[in-house]
Length: 586
Image 1 (cartoon, one colour):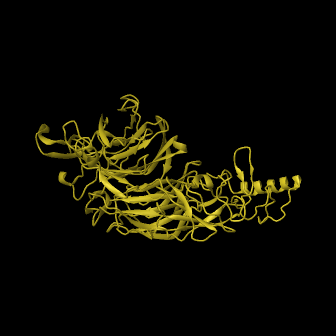
Image 2 (image 1 turned 120 degrees about the vertical axis):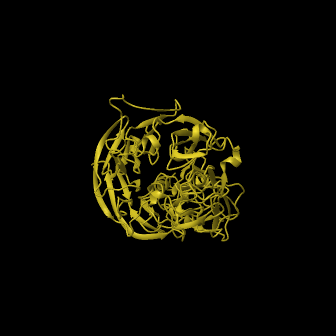
Image 3 (image 1 turned 90 degrees about the horizontal axis):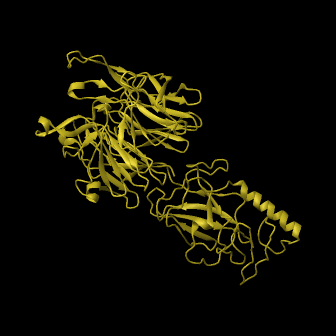
């Protein structure tokens, strides 16, 4: 990680002053604007150099001139084997073997990486060398680098490191020198969606999460319709290193590689929660699908609201049952709290004896105990200010708070279904901190099945959704500092069942269902300007009820979904999608 571009100008200025004070004139040096502190290089010799107290080499050879990206495999993405060509003012000597680019060069933007196993090779031109990118590189070359923007996701730049080995030498001079400021890594990659490997099993309504080792786990889903045979039992893993999906059961066996209930039924569901814990394992809880058999365990598989929970361990690719939630629920949220526990909020119980019952009580999963806990007493239960399902939960305030927004709930009813409840919109929002919650104001436009994402230092963007009659196009921003909601423009196409992916200061609203068909268009919101940019991208396959995860190399992966539906996005009608797509803004 760089210290900032001004450091180089400061170092060069200090060297100039030091050179003048010591009387070490620049004489015949070919270094432009650099008062030399080393003996001038001569043909056939290596220039001496001055080494700093911290071990860095202050170079006197040709200065870095420019850098640009080469898409070696022509896949439209930054990936292993692609190259960054680095050019210097004058020619280089032949390069020694086994140079480490992470020592020789410094990336100016936080989080940028040449990728594991990157190497340096001789360039085509005599004044160039190539950095061959390794596994999971992280660079952004489509836009121009700005010295004032070095946060993760900003356009990339590099410079010669102050701690370089000194082994990259000019033809008639000493070690290569840093430029006054980092050189923008130029490139012509076009942002947008690219084809990704297909899932082994088409599915919509699944959950997905990126693991600490860089792989992606996808769990559950349905292939089509609402019948037991359509729910998907096999989880899959995507490995960016091999660029392929693999069934978990193929790695660890049919039993250990599936979620098995206490009745030895393979658990399969939609609308469950999938969340990575602080130790790198993954909690999967609740949902709507299959975990039991009817007729006291003797009948066929029964579709119902689920209460079981499992832990996936990436170390051995196995699932382990960790008991049940206190309240069965689907269409709920599970969010990591600042202390490593998980807040389970809202949801709906579709069981026979609790038909149309929206869950208000919170429960907390404690990884240290491996159990779900109620909070409060039976007379004063820790619960939501408003009942909600099909809502969103977003971590805010550095993880200290969780913002719950919108959704719907069933009002009234019961008496074994004789009194019919009424589906009602949840207008409000609330912030949960620890085991307390407070209201955070009403949405301008009530909505359910929407998307939410934290953008910028203090805002949460809400996009899409629908009410009880139509899809919603209005965007809304929540300001965590003022606890206020403001309108933020309108999508060109209202949609429910969409997702928001955040790339730097841009939020991309992807996919969804507009009331008649799935949406292929993705629209871009600028977090700094707090408005839509007018830029759009197009999915190759229009879809709703899909997942989006961010890969460690900065790309986003769109996973599965449903297409061909004719009803509300919550109905999961239509067909499951096997296709996946990368979103690239590199």
